[in-house]
Image (cartoon, rainbow, N blue to C red; front, side, top):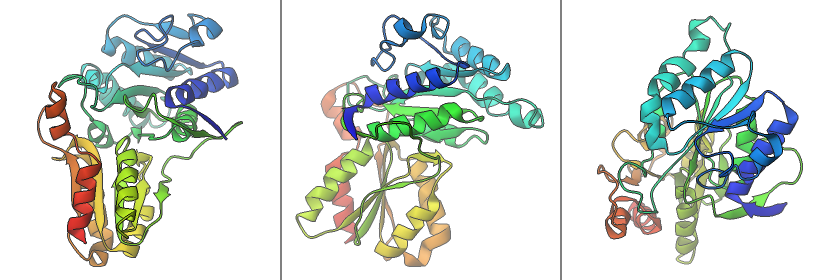
Length: 323
């Protein structure tokens, strides 16, 4: 194992896949000479050149459309959409084209494209640059959705995404880029649809997405000091979703908290809750709880942003209410 930054893990995954397969290329705004907004592609333009690390005009529709077309011709593009908020400008290309062309062509067209983007609050980026919209894409058949929370998962899942013949929404969190974590040395991938049990426990199950995994682990550490044993699960991908691991944990603990930054209303936590209710209703000793963002635009002011976005305190409170 080596300990590196999350952004370095992303860059290493891209570099290794570009070395492994000459069909892999990158495109996006400022990803070349500038190295990307969060420096996740730094050094790749110098190594591979402008043909394979392509700076694009400021047009998300053009970036996504070019990537879909390139994938149809046999290339394996990784398209960066600088903020997930800006996928709104490319929804036709992602939702109506990339997700559906394989089905509508009877499998004759393959669309091996990765849309790398980032979401989340915590930097006073305000309402148009801080949303968490993973549930939008999870709703669409034909798209796979990954939300890595650690450097090790970021690298392993991204390599899997690049090799997949289906379109993948690869969603990073802007506050994770400068976090450090252990990454296996050498070649490795992480299969989609396999959750990670980050911490074992027997009293309450907490299922958390993306950066909320770190906050769930913080809450679990605090609760352990009071004798409360929390099991923390990171699904890692929500399409496909490893519901079996979640259900098995709920059957063990009898209590469930679901945590994510996205808005509570129709957030992916509601889907997890519904599937648990369908499969493990009688294992629940109390109604489950959702710890999610409030149904408000993300504010600019830090004190208001902290009010809207849940944290470790909110998870601790939810766990104690269940107990």
